[in-house]
Image 1 (tube, rainbow, N blue to C red):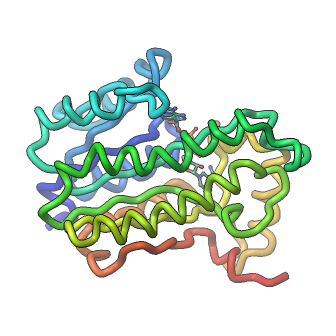
Image 2: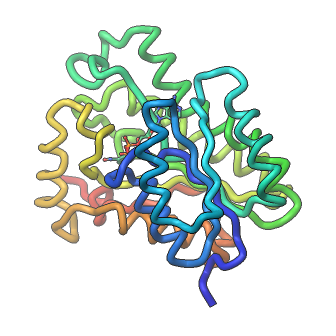
Image 3: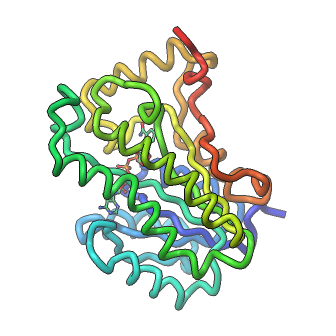
Length: 257
Ligand SMILES: NC(=O)c1ccc[n+]([C@@H]2O[C@H](COP(=O)([O-])OP(=O)(O)OC[C@H]3O[C@@H](n4cnc5c(N)ncnc54)[C@H](O)[C@@H]3O)[C@@H](O)[C@H]2O)c1
C-alpha cells in the first residue's frame, strides 16, 4: 500500500515547478496523499493553479500570505470545511529583501530583519497554531525547510541565516509543545538548489559549485531528494522522530575543511 494513502497534507510554498515544495508535492502525490496548497497573492494564483492541474481534482487551493493579518485563520477555516483532519503540514516558505542577502551583515536593517523573521521563522508557529485543531488528537507531522547557514556563516546568506537559526529553534519548541497532542515537528536542512528564492542570494552559484566539489557524495541535491526525505518524516516511517533537523545535503555539513 502507498505510504500516505488516505492521508491529507497541506503544503505551503509552491510557486513554480522549481520550488522545493513542488518536489515534495510530487513525492506525497505518488504515495497517495490528498494535497492542499496555498498561493501567496493574486499574481501567484494562476501559476499555482496551472501546476495543480497535474494533481487530482479534489486538491484544495486557497490564498495565504503569512504577513497578512487573518490570512492564516481564513485559510484553515476554509480548509476545515474540506478536510475533517490533517495528517501533515509542509512549511516551505521564506523571504528576505534582496539587498539584505549580500554585502555586510552588520548593515542589516531592523525592517529587513523583522520581515525575514516574520515570513521565514515566525510563520511556522502561526501555521502550526492554525493547523493544530485539524492535526491534534491523532498522529500527524509538520516539516519545515532550513539551510546550513542557520549554524555556520555562509557568505551573503546573512539575515536569512539568523532566520533559519530561529526556524530550527522553533522546530524544537513546537515539537516539545505539540508532541503530547500527537504532532511531530521536524526540519530538513537542504543543500543549495537553484530556485527563484535561492537566486536572490548573491553569488549563489558558488554555493552549488562548492557543494558539488566538497561534499562526500560529490554532487548537489535536488527537489526529488528533499521530497523523498520529506516523505519519510511525514509518513509513519518517521513516527519516532521529532524536534530534529535532518540534513539532505549530500553530506556537506559533516566536512571540517
Ligand atoms: N533553494 C535552496 O537552496 C534552499 C536550501 C535550503 C532551504 N531552502 C528553503 O526552502 C524553502 C522553499 O524555498 P525554494 O528554494 O523552494 O524557493 P521558492 O521561491 O520556490 O519558494 C519560496 C516560497 O515562499 C513563499 N512565500 C514568500 N513570502 C511569503 C509570504 N509572505 N506568505 C506566504 N508565502 C510566502 C513564496 O510564495 C514561494 O512559494 C524556503 O524556506 C527556503 O529558505 C531553500
